[in-house]
Image (cartoon, rainbow, N blue to C red):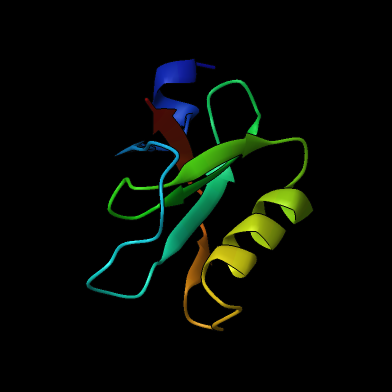
Amino acid sequence: MNPVTTMPPILHVAAIHAEAPAGGAARFIVGQDHAGRWVAVEVHGRAGGLFRSRDAAVHFAAYETGHRADAVSVSPDRVELRL
């Protein structure tokens, strides 16, 4: 089995710890990084973090977005938090 062809694509998102975007509603992507850690990242790279569980990542993202139903997506692809 060739790991290069069987691994899901990587979604690279730059993120820093900051306030929610001023001009628009925040949206987050939740997924796992290359090491299996759970990541929540704001789509514009303005906020994010690493979490111990999927539930913790989704909880953080939901809180940051005011619990809007359309604001948090769980990705089947790998998600990388870039600082």
